[in-house]
Length: 362
Ligand code: HH2
Image (tube, rainbow, N blue to C red; front, side, top):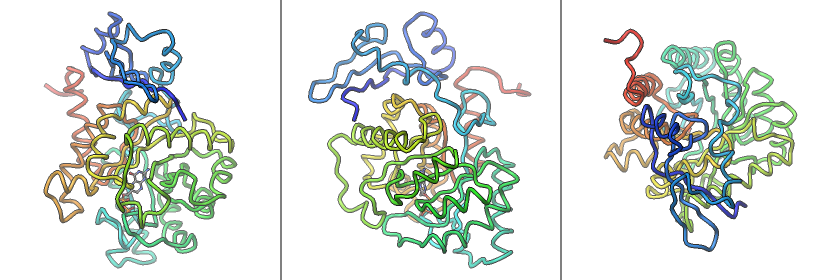
């Protein structure tokens, strides 16, 4: 567990960031394009202090390399939106009960019709600019009942086989047998919301396959109970400690840091204020030296903040706002249901931040 953290504050982007970097007044957050001008020095059991980056004491500078250097490109992927942009991960849920309201089994689809619908959904997301498709066969919404690996495989394997030739796929599963089958069927990335805690065989499958891995924070181990009175001393530091611990466990199992992305797990055992704190203080987690993934899309917090209580696509505009905010705070991967809307918003946001005219624009 880290005993010290540097929290980047005073964030800059675009020409302002470049000027501040040249003048030695800022440091790049994970290689840019965001830069930070202030550092909050946080040591366990002591009052935090705030200093300009040029005044970070020598005794703290050992924490800087993972914070300022670009992590290895996740899964070797270059974002389709260009350097410095996040990867966009489109969600394909082969479930009857997903919280986002988009589960393909909810539409009563089976067999060839299900595969055709998943293929059409995936193709539309790719045409809209998705970099990765995340295929899941088990809902992990609060209170969801678990699904056996056999049922999970029955749902997702035909979809993975159909989509694998078209795009890099991640498989959203906590189960080692499902990981193994999904990778054999053409998935390239493992997305485990239990961070390798649910199935003792998972670490070995990932290590032996060489697949990139997403480790996510969830409070406790069970989605059925994770929302029962979640409590933290300091949610960002607690999540940071957890992710550092899981990163060490993955490394011990033979999965190097360069293959791993970390995710604070918005909505997984968190109240609205916890989700907001994690979004806001995301740059602190960059100190773990991995690409950061944020999945706020269509979650209950978006509904609470926007009044879109009915869920599903009604939460799209708020989800896009959360995605842009996360991108500005160093998220390298955005997990979203509404790919076209998110990509359009990212294009405008990127151009406005950089101060450049978009290609072909006036
Ligand atoms: N959120 C969901 C599922 N998987 N994986 C990662 N890494 N991060 C997330 O935030 C995340 C995730 C829940 O969203 P959804 O897939 O829409 O719902 P459900 O689990 O009900 O299918």
